[in-house]
Every structure is written in C-alpha cells, then in structure tokens.
Amino acid sequence: MVQEALLIPWQRRADFVRALAVPLALLAGFYLAWYLLDEPARQITGWTAVFLCWLAFAILFALFAVTVHRLVLLDSRPLRGIPLPAWSMREARFVLFILLIWAIYLAVWWVVLLIAGNLLPRGWFESSLQPVEIAARLPALYIIARLSLVFPATAIDRNAGLKWAWRASRGNGWRLVVVVTVLPWIVSQLFGLLYRDEPSTAEVVLLTVVGTALFALEIAALSVAYRELAGNEP
Image: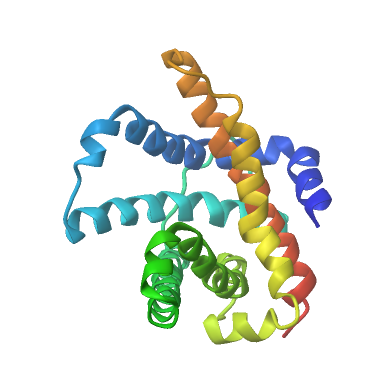
C-alpha cells in the first residue's frame, strides 16, 4: 500500500505538479505565515479565534487533499496549464467531515482521560499524567482512522457518511491507523531532521514547501487503502 502510494505520484509527477501547484502554494503559505508569525500566533486565544484558524487550515487542506484523492482514484488530469482550485459542495462536505472527525477525536480522548482519572489512584494519575494522556489518544486515533475512509469517498462524490466508513473499515482498523497516523508521524520525524537551529529564510520557505508536498504521499496512501477496502462497493 505504501509502495503504491509512493509510485503513483512519481509515475504521474507532471499531473501532480500541475494540479497541486496552487493548492500546495496556498497550504504552504498558511504554514509559512504561521511559522513567521509564531509569537503572535501563540497569543491567539478564545474559542472563536482558534476555530477560525482551524477552519482556515481545513479549507486549504481540503482543496489540496481533494485534488490528490481525485488524481489517484479517478485518474484525473488537468487539461492545460495550471488549474485554479474550485470550491463546491464536495469541498464543503470534506471540510465538514474534517471538523466533525476532529471533534470526535477530542471527545473520545477527553472521555478516556476522564475515565482514567477516576479509576486510577489520584497520586499516581497526577505523577504519570503525560503517559496516561498519550495512552488516552490510542482509542481516539483508532476511531478516526476507521472513519477516515469518508475522505476519499467524499472527494470522488460518493454519498458516504461516518456510519458507512465505520462499516467499510471493519477488520482493518489498525491497518488504517498505520496509514493515517503512523506513516505521517514517521514522515514528519524524518523530515524534522532536516531543520537546523536558526535557519535562513530561504531554508524555511524551501522546507515548508517540500514538507507540505509530502502530504500528497500520505493522502495517496489513504486513497489506495480506500480503493482496496471499499472501492468496489456499490
């Protein structure tokens, strides 16, 4: 699965470069602005401001991810030049699922952490809060991994919801955990080794663009998983 996800973008690199040029520039620009405005960004407080920041990211990520899913699953190719990203109900549903699944992740993580806090001895819980907090993420990650099939389905205009995604991923939950969480974590850790203390502006720009482009490999892996697990369902 991972090997195919690496081969598809490479074999069709011209299509990927043309189709993703604008979405990649927008998403990388968002990351770059966040990095350069690090100190002001940390001072963003209040639910409204935080939600607007997440919404802006979700919109830009949707434009990028939908394009990748359609390149892989529909073999779509830009006709000429560099196409501008279009916004439709497809992208709106994609953003809605991003926000909904993120909310589910937070809710599951918080409930598991709350249960652990009530079951474990108070002193032990407080002294071991960090490992308990990490352990509380596992069931949340498992759930969102199983629900993640809704993203490629939505990208190709399939009328699928969370209930369908949960059913379609039955028996392949941990496999999807590898695709959705482990693979991105490994890529981020390896890529993080390229950063150095006090990088130049050129380095920051280059690494931000390349790091954002690597999202395409992770999204392509999810597309391949979708095709294997649910692509033939009516």
